[in-house]
Image (cartoon, rainbow, N blue to C red; front, side):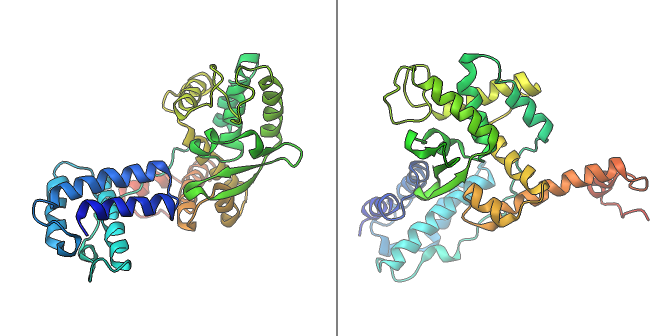
Length: 307
């Protein structure tokens, strides 16, 4: 099988069989197009690919690239080669010997419950802001990803059962409860929506032109409310999802329950929020305990705890 044919077949597999999101498929396509372009002058068929060809490609892209970028490209190559090996197109997997660079995962943006409330409250008061209100209430109250929010349809929500069906990564659907504030905002928005242009659309959230609200519009809403409510111009939709998880954890919620709510495939992803909670606990300890000193600063300096 020629390289370009094998690439295209794998991308079709991602779309049709693994039901990967359009963003995921697009990212794989970019990386594999680059890989094929680098390797094709040396080999024409996948059976001839060797580890040295992959390492030569990585050597080209690694110059000046961030470790996260290199790690993503290696992951794409490994997934492709693994699929080819399973399908019998190659005898052995040349990507097995590739090692990914260590990537330090950034902790999510931490917002206190008070700051989050101020951001949400900044959307109240005017009829024109009913859309902004429901956007932030659903992002924070339900812990939705921005992609899940904008793909909600009218049939996705059940105000009588106080729940909604979110379509997550890999087209996995999950049932999410609607809290009191989110439900109230949703009821208000649905009343106003009947008079909106495009009210016959299946989309739940409509923009000014009566078309489905898009990701950029949501980002602008959250940024504006961040400035109004908390004086923060760097606020993004995912920060509200992080806040939902962190505040639930601090309130005593079980990690498994948070994993189900957020739609995380792996518990290790949810466990990132335990670090956030520990940072908050350390700050509270430093502020409240008479013998605390400054735990956070001593940790950063590598100094032993005082006793």
